[in-house]
Length: 527
Image (tube, rainbow, N blue to C red; front, side, top):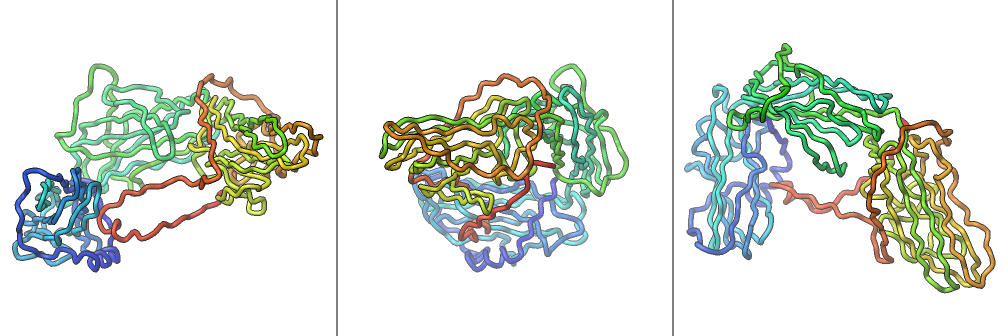
């Protein structure tokens, strides 16, 4: 039983004013044989109530609805039956005499819809391990409502893992020995545990164990991570700590640069435990004394390898006459030896484009915006005619051999001659990429040859980046990797922004009235 507690306070008060939480209504309509199918969905269907009780911070039964269609479900009424737990829990709203909360009927269109919250706390003196269920069901005038149940247990299993300090200086070809410890700071045992470990692609697992499943998964910040999911049938007792019988070996590969290793422990019940899938080495847990008090639910260790990556700017040449709009394609690529996945800040690799004198940018790629030299950042605007634009690739990481392209449309002004601008490899805030020790290819010419015109003086390029260039040093042999270039053509109507869709449950969904945009300016990659 994991401990999942959510402070609600003012959220519940606002929610109560909006939907009149838990209004009792009589049961009316029967389920329709055909029509829309509405499912009651729980954010968490296995809830642990803390001991001692915390009535000011109750554990939430947090439900929402999903209408699979077809069409709108009419007069949907949802009920929560607390009969199985009412003798040993208290709720944050008065419990009706029949122990059933009923929410007002409403129409539910296809898709997801907000639900509600029920806050529960254990009554003082209730024995640890007492278990029951809360059943959520409903009716619809023209459809079917699929019910669900939430398991509620007095006590929690609260697993924490050890924190790992940041590492620097590990060389490609070396192996890191990483100790892992699991502590149960809750009040109930876990029948078993699943250890989930993930690394970025510059690290690999040195050993393979039969009770671990290895795979490649995606994360919000990374296209690819390497996961090891290891299952143990060891009972994790409350107040106790357990460690792996050997450190986790992590090989630092040739492409390692900015890496991380993360691990977390997930409690399992007996039904979830699976045997080791064959013969071979088995990773085990051994007792390690009392539970550590300084653990964390998820530990993420930054590992900065002793390596470099060569970020290269690419330019282009176009031809035309005065009045023409010509296309130039500029690029930013990584020639290795390290891959670039800078994971400790927002000053990511970028391309600064200086528009050739005598031309005007009239088509700006979607990931590019006007550069503000004073603020040392992009404005987020795609105003035509600016002298410089900063282009921020998405995703921000670059594998070895990866190249991103950006196509600008440049209008040749009257009386213009052949003219040259620049594309410069830099960062989002105009800093030098300190992991790049090869600077001869940081800039590339962007030239527009004007038929019948003379030659104009080159455009004034951006000032030197804020950090001084570092003389070229050695490095590992780049790994050959073919990556298809993702071209960003943009348009005059492009906004340059990316859409962020957030799925919300319960009261939070009802209280979201607008969007908050937060811009954080961080330092360069020098660490």
